[in-house]
Length: 272
Image (cartoon, rainbow, N blue to C red; front, side, top):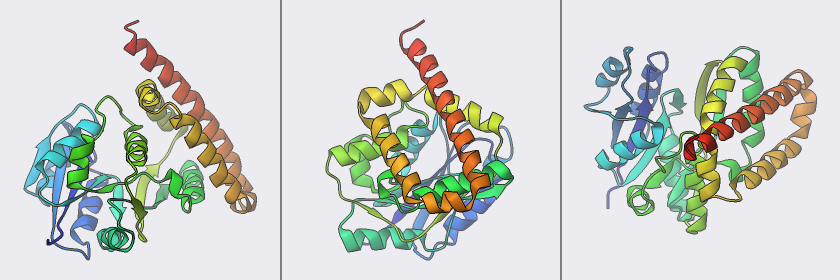
């Protein structure tokens, strides 16, 4: 069977980054592919930009999980990949994903990421992500057989943020063979600010009760694997004490934000 790939891009008011994202998908060394953009009711130029790259522009919400599931349902490829609009794929990403499939028999493939952008906190995030670069236990697959996605029921629409990790746990529970692509995605995080990170993490934290209900050991596993990654890269952290100190501040603040969000999420779930 001829292999075809559908790439689903979720968007919401992302006119700053979308052009580069779609350009990087269209320029992939692997063909044929289709691009599907699923927009969450943008009010900027997002949809106008999307129309220059694809005829498959859908509108769905209220969250990324629903957007992705909507894109999967419209996909025609036998493999499906999903990316966020602030990601730029290096030219060989899709080719590397299929190579991982052929080499290991994987039905799901993850792609390592780097952080790019401006400012101190973005450099801190880049160092943090570097610590994860050789830790497959922390990689969330983003390239799957379309049939496998159908079997799994797609993403859990009750989650906004932890849905990637939830899918990883479901794949592991089903003993699905997973691989890692020998290619990279550049994640354009712009200029991170503590205020912006706080707001996003509180919001993601509201889905933690749903995540822990489905994955009772998920948070503990994540914390263990994250600390192992930091220990493995302790030399890198020692060489950049300025950024390592920022990591302590950033990760500490994020932990508090997640707890705040989880508290709000529990109140919502219990109707109080």
